[in-house]
Length: 271
Length: 314
Image (cartoon, chains in turn yellow, green):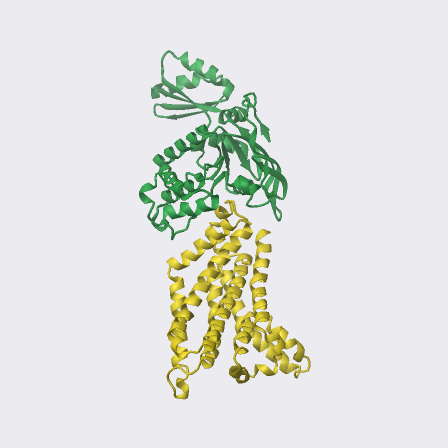
């Protein structure tokens, strides 16, 4: 593999997103949402103003779990199929570059743009909150930011895979939306349904492992379990064994979710 | 496949592009069906054929973009599907049909992007833009470019890194006549430097004066390869003799040619066109000369490449 080729493609994708203000727009969305949640999240309870980092992160997790997968899928769904449909793919592939290098470069460039937006958007909020937070709370917040980046990378990887498999952009967008529905909306309902139908007789042992089969759930567990107060709030502690809740282990699962779709995409793209 | 070899006697340089029994099937469609081809270094080679004849598929296989179902293509001695082909790609330029470039980049940025991929340094880009006459538009975005300018930029991209082999698919699409002339001037200069050029064109009259040799493709097969003149002779198409006479002399002309193998006589006022077999040409001209100056002017029209082309591809 030639790193220079990967870097050229990645650089173009990244700067394209900077130049068309995609990065700026997404970062602004994150900042505005995070600030709104931090300061007005408790308005229903009659309180306005920053309450606690636990409360803020728990609310942000619920938001990010919908938003970031969607943004990542929209960002990546036409990475390859878009070039193919426009007719620029043949020229790219006639260059001294392998298909893997092209795919990896596309992924890394888009991932860089998404990570940059996420870190800049939420990081700005951290700066605003910094004076009101202790070191521990800040670390929790950084943990949330890091896991948000990982969540974005995982769904971006799925999006790039879609962009290789789809015959055209329309189908790719359909597949991307279907993935979003499945992982973000349907997956947990299915698990819950299965648990209820079997009266919890079989679910006990497999259930936590099945949660690992969804990057969105991995993200939720990563954040919820790092906060003692919130864990009991969500009632997840009863079903999720502490042994699996190790951040490094969940982090590894997330990396697997980044690597696996890319590997499948590479295999398919080479064919 | 017809083989014509007036130029085989010429001590030809070794082929830089070779195709051996190349086949490409898409399901039951035989897009390319057993192609053998040798293209020598420094040759300006034309590939012509109808849409769907298999030209673009053959082109893409030559560039290693799609693998052949069977057979082998070698460029500069390296199999296009092999691992060593990346090194060859640095010396190959490609202009796809209807080239699509990135709308959001400027002309110069476009070249710099492709230069990086080809391992060419950025300072080389302005000179290439100059060569295709786009210096004035270097800092404008491609979305503001006309069709002709995009085509020039696509050509510029193919010229990056002093390629030894150029694959140009319909390169003069969208160019005005002046630009077409400039384009072929660049090709001639490149050929003089030993660059091999393979191009397709649907404007046959344009290609016929400019290529060294050409191949005619139809239904996935190469029907004929050779110089334009060799193909004409091999096809043995009738030629036209155009005359100018006084309209009142038409009957005299008809009578004079009455015993000769003339297949058609078409008259429009004082212009008369006579169609005859190639080997009857001198007999017809002598018969016309014997009309005591009644023929005011005479011009022999060779079959065009279109005629040759349709002769081979039908």
